Image 1 (tube, helix red, strand yellow):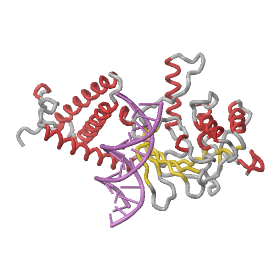
Image 2 (cartoon, rainbow, N blue to C red):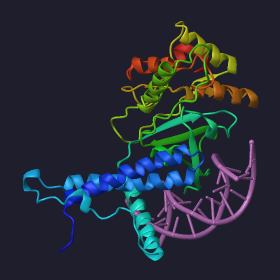
Image 3 (cartoon, rainbow, N blue to C red):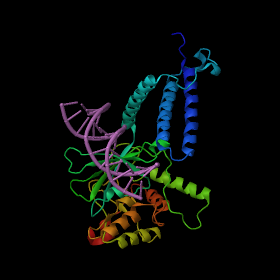
Image 4 (tube, chains in turn brown, blue, yellow):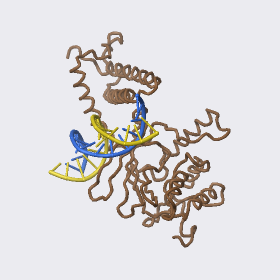
Length: 332
DNA sequence: TGTATTTGACCTAA
DNA sequence: TTAGGTCAAATACA
């Protein structure tokens, strides 16, 4: 077909456009509060990146390449078409985006977590080190409680595709099933409070990145399977906020075992318990619950709950056997 | 005024 | 055809 670009020329044009959009994003983002525009640019950029990836796969071997068009002959990237064509392109782009999302949905890694919060209604507020934005809620057939849909706050600004679904269990209203999908690609900083004397940028940044990596590795469950992994709702129960704090303190100071649970139905795998999977006794007051949810679930609020704590858990490995009944006595 | 949440509509996979 | 997942306008909130 006359005038048709060969694949490698198209690839170069796409790469050029992707770079330009990236620069534009940086400018718009630097302007301050340009959330929607940045989001749109990010979508365009993602689309271009997909196209580049596809073109690269389809690109023939260099030896077979026909003579390339000089870059200066390339048509302008900007679309000077009519508003009508822009509108139809927008519709096409949206359809493409939706299809891509569906494709990605299938391939994203997926794993499950189970959180018990006595008193109810607080699990949505449980922090796991990342900031989430709710984008939907849906009643699920056969489930008494609706399912909440959350995505990473940095989806639009950083293209992070991580999502999670939160659903209250029918059996036990204090139990929430959380399904995570996709890894965080946003290198999201855990919003740790400034610790005294720890204001060196280089150190704190690497620390944050490390924290993000630790969380990102989803070490709570075998991540390699990319399948839903769940464990029975056997939870550690503490009589009070202080008990949890004491346990965490004891662990952190080396005089106690880390928090682990052993699945009741499996004797081959033991999963370390994330701080967000601590159960609090029903007698705990609402304020205590809030306090303990913050203290135990967030790496943010407790100086004792930093990456070391989590990393240490990870280092024990999935085969670490911890029997709560032995450790906590008659409570189990 | 900007940002987050709610909620009905829409789309896709099964 | 239907259930689950997502979008986006409307609304709430700080």
